Length: 582
Image 1 (cartoon, rainbow, N blue to C red):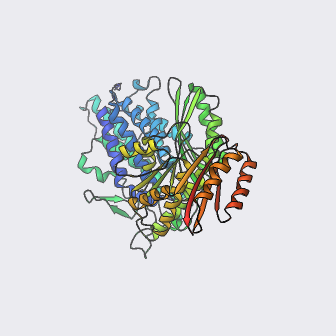
Image 2: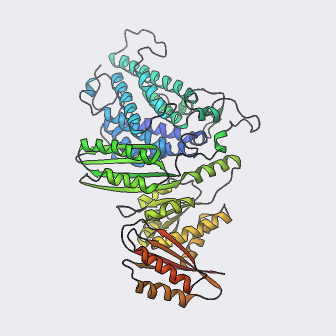
Image 3: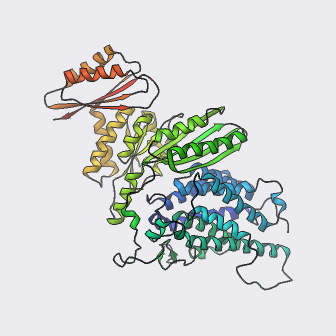
């Protein structure tokens, strides 16, 4: 039977909706389990959350765009997932879906029978997933992609069927398609069980790979929709009991398998041990993520993809670059890397896109992986409620590492002015324990407040005030690890009232004397200590800074001077003055 162009391996637009609704449900049910099993490449306990949020981004675009055909629906999901992809596994999942959708654009695709369409889509998805990763590793989500593609080509059915000569051609086609997806999912589940044999860290931690398990859930949902399994059995469709340990979901009491492997620790009441969580091991100090847009042609977009992956490999690990050419003279990538030098990742993007007609970098998010893994380790040992998340917005690349080391999620303003949508992207990276957003402009503060009225917003007006607020909040969280977002907001706002900021775009010795040093002299008292924070742009004269430091020590010997590179191009200085009681 020849397939219809309005359907996709027998699925309608409604069926595509059902597939991703069910996949999202299964990821949501198993999110905590996947997070707990997340030990590779870094034990930062967020794989389940990242894959869920990635897929939710895809389903939101699907609902919003209302496509007319199943193929168009799949493209919308893939595009939404690309834009909203999070973390290593989420980004690979998004590219896997992009490969799935890409298969439908190939010549004569819809001339093939439904099961051959499905086989081609699984093969294309596998190729896209592998190509996105700079250094592919087996025993991960990639192994599941490979196994599913291989399984789909297996001619033998996984179930016995009675010969039925009266069955219609359409029914026979559905049976073959069903056998194809069942073979694919069966191979994927078998591959999932084998992941600890490929990665010693999984074996030592007694877990199956979390990202691999997540992709099995997505494929299981596809099998369910093709087989038209009633909705009330959805919770039973999670991969069968590959292990001895199971977990219960809170929806209907059905057993859910946990991606755990091996024997449970007899001293922790049946919960599998996570030896790896006792080790703060990371493959780069920071996790850096950003979107890259470029106006270019398709061939050049492919060159940018491969060149950027290689450039990022030189400065980091866990490199994933997904996306590429989208439509006429436009390309979009979602980039992920673990590195010790966030600015080098952005430099690589700038250099790679230098020959594009135009390009821009947006939604640059940076997190401290060492701190994230350390907190995960502590949480596994002593489950506690941590302080609210802190989102710090800045336009100063040089401040990013120091701000991230406080535990804040850093949102860097680069080519485009930050928006409430960018802040929303950063908020989704948090723990859900409440959040405090420190903006770097009044306009952004108002926008965030309008869109997220329940989020505490500290309206810093410049990067120096951002530093002051972050410093105050970091101290507060150290003194009270359970601080609420409202407590932190009050502390941060108070720190700004104690801070005076002076911006000099082209500073001179005279301006520093008149605007800064005189101000310090007039406002200091015997019972206060001035804290002077100096943010210097890339081409600010070193002699000017040295002279300012010497003069400051002369007139205020008890002053505390903090000098930081802003990383912004220019000759300017941003100086904040704060007085604390001695």
